[in-house]
Image 1: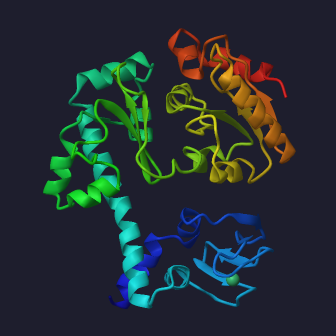
Image 2: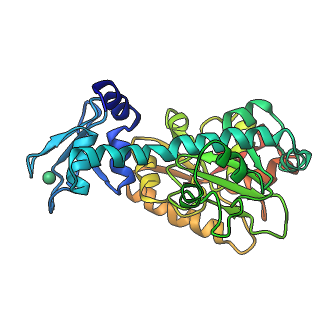
Length: 323
Ligand SMILES: [Zn+2]
């Protein structure tokens, strides 16, 4: 591998992203966009690993080691330089694969009336929204053939969770939404389990880079809630993909001063509201201002709009939300 190819590899794998994907938790920002956290390269009890995402470099004040993402992979996996490069290239490989999948499924959406009908049922009509969320459709029984034709081997597809052990497409009759390093599929047939993710983490908060710019953020639990609010002009919305936040999502939500409006499902058994209460408590303990949005009984933000609610009415719910 020549110098240019190495530089390209390093550019394609941001060090911070690689660290986080390997479970690294930053303890605190320390200015100039840098972070400090426990060092995974030596037994560490007080944060001594400094990461500079802009320079894509790390340095540990404890074990006195530092460098770029390749150096980190060498030390972390305890391999020589060529193996570290090979591991990083393999790791990077999943991203282009998911990109192909996304492209393929987006074409399918427009070829399958049943998928578009389903989106309409859930109130989703705007082409800008479909573009923004990169919504696609997985008809089933066609992805494997397409990717094999592109040169991806069956073991690679199985490992990514795109193809089942028996060799079938994992997502069948599902409207699909690309996530960071994952793909969420919502079944359009009532007989199948509604939600399906690929193996691996669901990633951070949905479209957080956009939502975090606002001083007030609306947090919803499902992507169809996100979609309907975004379509109605609430661009300060984000989604946790379920009522339980993972460590990365917690960090994101608490990464600066803001007010979080929690608009979880008002399901009849109260589980969404219970989860919301827990969330509010934890957030306020971490110094985040919170509001609980109270939807009419049995509603989630999606059904609120589908059954006739509009943006001004939702705005009134936000204004009436209690701490
Ligand atoms: Zn160290």
